[in-house]
Amino acid sequence: MNGPSASRRFEKLKQAMARLEEAMAEPEDTPYIVDASIQRFEFAFELFWKTMKGFLELESSARMVNARDVLKQAYASGWIDDEQGWIDLLGMRNSTSHIYDETMARAVYTQIGARMPLLRKALAVLKSKAD
Image 1 (tube, one colour):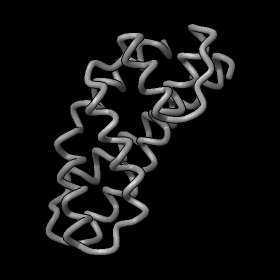
Image 2 (cartoon, rainbow, N blue to C red; image 1 turned 180 degrees about the vertical axis):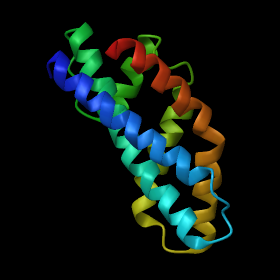
Image 3 (cartoon, rainbow, N blue to C red; image 1 turned 180 degrees about the horizontal axis):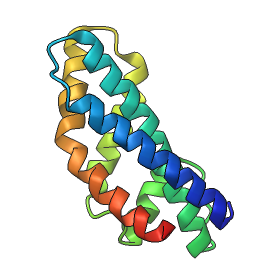
C-alpha cells in the first residue's frame, strides 16, 4: 500500500469512527440503536486494522496477513498499548456475525462502549501517521 492509499483509508476510518461515536451517543433503549452500533463497530474495526497494516508496511518490511498479526505488530511498534484489549476487540468483531439474540447483542454493545477509549487513542496515533 502506498502512502496516499494509507491516507485515504485513514480518512474513511475517521468517518467510520465518527459514525460509531454518533451511534454510541444515542440512548440504547431501542434494539436498532444496539444493532446500528454493532454494525458501525464492525466497519470501524475493519478499517482500523487495515489502516494500521498500511501504515506499518510503509514503516517496515514486515508483511502481515491477518488482523491478529497487525495488532501484534502495532503493539510491538508502540502504536497501541493494550494488546489484549485489541485482541478482545478482534474477538468481538469475529463474534458479531454470530449474534442472534438481544442479550448477546447488548453484551457486545456494552463491551464496545467500554473499549471506545482504545479506539479513540489508536485513531489519534494513526492521525499522526497520516499527517
